[in-house]
Length: 331
Image 1 (cartoon, rainbow, N blue to C red):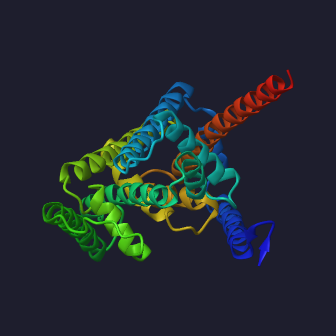
Image 2 (cartoon, one colour):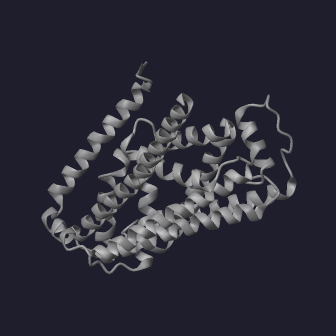
């Protein structure tokens, strides 16, 4: 059943997530020194916050570059400017037009330019996968190195080793397939999973001939995450927190993995609890930890609003172009 094109289960999911977010913030206000956190926020160093936000933009642009290179490898004819605009607009859609979804928006927009639905979807899948793959490398290292610092059990440390082993095994798998030339012929009659494998093989991303391209995309994604970690470090500096870069990498690589679980509304509430839970283990006060979590959420919202601004500008340009076309048609 649908309501104006929206599936009811998705609506219910969003309602539940929204309620969970309210409950998490209520818990934070009750259990944390919220007034002290607000006091810390009121003394924020605006220049360090601005530097952090610029670095966050750079981190997102790095991830855009990864997606754009994948798009070009699949031979989709889309400009870099279009990919940048669609990527940032999807952040706005994901946070403020939540019944659509950011990835759905990206797929629809890129497909409108190319008319190749399968290839567009494939580029999104590979882009997301490499983003996740690069993140869990950081997570695996962090769990191995900092499990005791965060008060985790020894089994969590071994889970980190398992993550790193699986990442290395996958890289070896890619290397082996890059030499074998499997799946060279595209068969449109094949099932979608087989077509996905064939498309990957023909375009040298996972099973193709160029292992170097796989490493390039991995390096770009690792760089994007790392720039994002530096952004959080300066965010902490803006609040007077002397976080080391190593602590930030460990904190954010674990937290970002947790935030992939769609428990709350776009991670709000869960993000703040994660900051409090992990940073207090490193010796920081709850108020400091909560203030950093709240500031990170503000940065996320501002990034989304930047995407909304780009969307408004583009829609205004399209409307102006249409009106000029109509006037030319009248004359």
